[in-house]
Image 1 (cartoon, one colour):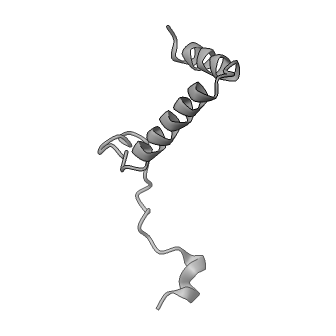
Image 2 (image 1 turned 45 degrees about the vertical axis):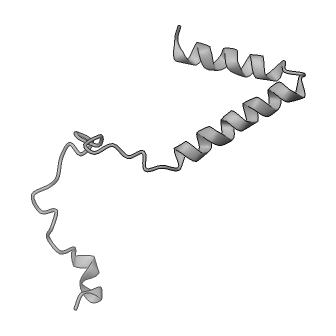
Image 3 (image 1 turned 180 degrees about the horizontal axis):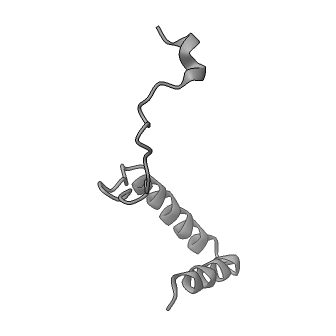
Length: 70
């Protein structure tokens, strides 16, 4: 099943919940997930190929910033 379809089904299911105990379980799952999400989720190398072009004069000083340079 497609991920977006599953998400929509879960949202619909959660919106129909009337049992406080089940709602509390869902809230605790959300809190647990948020705790896990605070970990460093960066993946080394995941930004490959994002920069497609760097001009040859990339490191050349910019004339309009000369007054700020020492």
